[in-house]
Amino acid sequence: MRLEPFPLGAESVRCVWWGELGKGKTLGAVRQVVLFHERFPSLPIYSNIPLFDIPYRKFDSAALLFDLKEECALLLDEMWTMADSHNCLSLLNDVLTMFMLRSRKKRWRVFYTEQHWRQIDLRIRFITDRWVEPEIRHGFILWENVKSKENVLIPPPQRSDATDYHKFYDHQADPFTLDVAELRARWLKFRKSRMG
Image 1 (tube, helix red, strand yellow):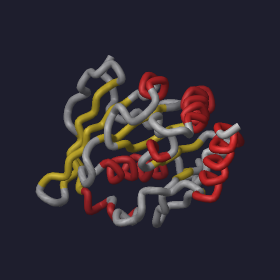
Image 2: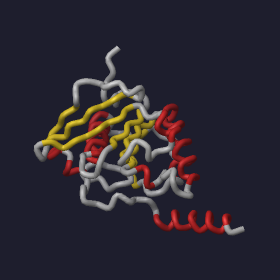
Image 3: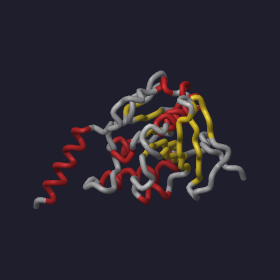
């Protein structure tokens, strides 16, 4: 059986784009969201970054994950900002792990980015279906090597004209998209519990 690089027709899929800054991670994930919208125009899209020319619902709090019940696509740019396993907010790791595990049965397509494959909790890594290393070549070609979760390269490399997808998001926007007030409240609660 031949593996599809991005099985959008699957009932659920979890894909991560990873690599250095400026390599095309967000661009690749946005491209998949646009393709999802073209294929399933009636299904909602949730995104933690603003999208242009396609309808989406703002995702700025991990609390949304508790109430999400519908089939949809989720774009989580720099997901590590919500689930940094090296900080005190391990609660967010638990929430995101629960969400990723539920994504299969809930028919969610999850597209997320991170700078290094070790930034996300081990449990989330184990259930991510596609690992994508993007690269922008010649200034406008998005080149993506896609691997399965078993680390098997899925040929051929995906190539697309990056200029077709830059218009769907602000590639200069701040990648920190969480609700800062909620994050601060959790931090203060954590600090208070540690101080006795």
